[in-house]
Structure formats: structure tokens, C-alpha cells
Length: 285
Image: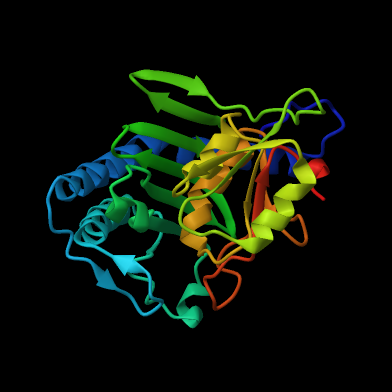
């Protein structure tokens, strides 16, 4: 964020702050287009969702993929490439080599259909996830839930917002309960984990909310949940868009072991470490 010159700030520091502000403004200015791409992808997903045949296939990692994943991928790739801000790395096309990715300072990280298992179950809990990454950090994020038409978005330094039923609200994470209410913990529908069961025992009394896709992280960002522990496998496209939304809402998305923010494109593997989403790392055990 730009800091006013108090007379104590050097010219170099003021120039850096101004540059950061200009960058934030630039990226915020592309948000409307990115949101439009997400909604277009959502409409394509819904068209297939209303049909009886999803053409379900199994990928090498044993996860499912459908016609809807590929349809959304095509729309997002075409749209984001037109912005000329960097290459697109998508769950449905992660073929770029580590040597190639090491040259990327800025790129798009996309999950065209986050929650494919939820899509197949027809429980409506799936999203379109789009993030812009710069120097390993997410600086813009859009998450769109096609069925409910709920939209979450943020840009670095610009705040986080939710749009639903033609109204917009700024997101703010909830303060910890401090004993006056139960902890609200959100966990996955599709990935039960003994490690999660052990983790949540440190937060009694608690109430559990089972949900699919990146919506769990958005609940923490909007103050409807206190913690989301993910102590199982995920990939970088699962978290990047949510991370900037969570952070701009005042919460944290951190490595479960180090409590440091997740970083992207730092290694050959695109798998995340176990992570936690919470209002503050001070509440973590």
C-alpha cells in the first residue's frame, strides 16, 4: 500500500511504495474481465450439469475429470491469455516443465472446476478458481460458485468481497471465540482424515460444517467459520485464488507445520503441504 511521505521516508522507499500501489491498481483493473471469464466458465459448467452424461474419466492420479472441466478450461485459457499478463497453468493442462516454469515471474493459476467429485455427486458445492501469481505470491483471486451464483474476489491491497443476490459485501474474518461460543470448523465432504479428527479435538467445544471445494476457505474469509484444516493432499490450483481472498479479509492460509503462508511455483511438484486456514496463527496448536 502507498504510504504518505512523512519526511522520514527515503526517496527510494517512496518510489517503491508508489510502484506497489500502481501495480495493485493495474491488477484490480483487470478484475472485471477475470470475473466475467469465471462466470462464462460457470455457465458452461451448468450447461453440462443439467445433462445426464458427464463423460467421466479417470486421470493418472486417480481423480475424476468430466466434460465440464475441459469446457471451463477452454474458456478460461482463451480469456486469460487475451489479457497478456502471463501464461496459464491449469489443472487440466499442467504440462509446462519445471525448467519452463522457473522462468515465470507472473502467471495465472487456474482450477476450472474445483470440486469435480461434488459436481459428479450433484451437490452444487463446486467452484471456478482463478488466481494471478507474482513472484510466488497470489495477488488476485476469483472464486465463483455457478449454482448459487455467489462470487468471491480480491486483489492484493484492494480488500476482499462477496457478491450474492445482486448485493456486494466486504469480507472480514471472525475473531476467535475465546470461550463464549463453540469453534466453527469446516472440513471436507470428500476427504475424511484421521489427522483432521485428531486436530479438531484441540478445539472443543466445536461445530463442524462439511462442505466441498474452495468454499470452505471462503467461509473463513467471510467470518462464518474459524478454522479449516486440510491435512491431506491438494494442489497449488486448489488454494491460490482462496489465499488472496483469505488474506485480504484479514485471515491466514498457512503451512500446517511452519505456519508460514503458502508460496507457489517454488518446486517441481505442484502439490501443497498440509495447510490451515484461520483468522490468526495465534490460535493454532
